Length: 141
Image (cartoon, rainbow, N blue to C red; front, side, top):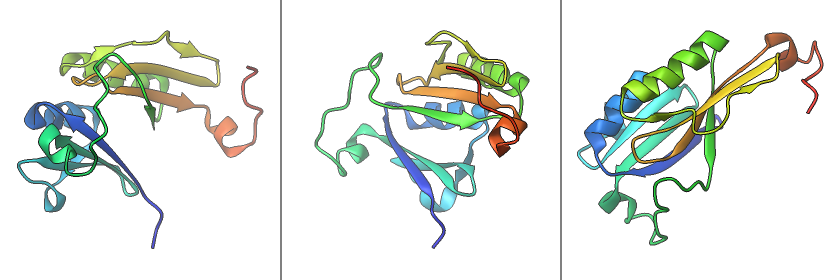
């Protein structure tokens, strides 16, 4: 079986969250979606499962961190710096919060972080293809 990543997140408003992630470029996979959850596909191997809180509780009794706290940040690769900027703007235009951290510009790497409407931290990130392929050194820390 092909290795895949499934990210599961609790949300307060499923339709709002579906619209938010669609605006960022995710595609809803209706075969795995219903009135309590939605499978939002980023790529062939990366799927975000958004679930209303009562559905989330079927999987864990661990508390949901309050908005504004961070346990994890998920970063999504983008094809260009402009695509990173567009993703950040799409987040703002669709109920999220842009630039929750300082913009990271290291020349060959560029990233901007945002939060979804429920406060989950995300980042759009571009890396120079030569650095990604190993043909050029990564930026100095």
